[in-house]
Length: 68
Image (tube, rainbow, N blue to C red; front, side, top):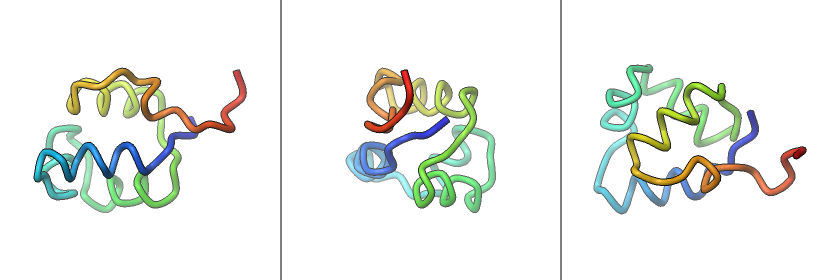
């Protein structure tokens, strides 16, 4: 799934969370979390978990050029 990294990074920073903090909440490695923010790709499962962890609708992270 293509995601927009900017809203993820912004929401994480607004909460004063490090990559490690968010990765721990998702139960993934900090390297994997870094790749999600950097590359803008993740599984639907991780996108849903991100949504829950950050308290934001999953649509917030959807890449603008994603196929509908």
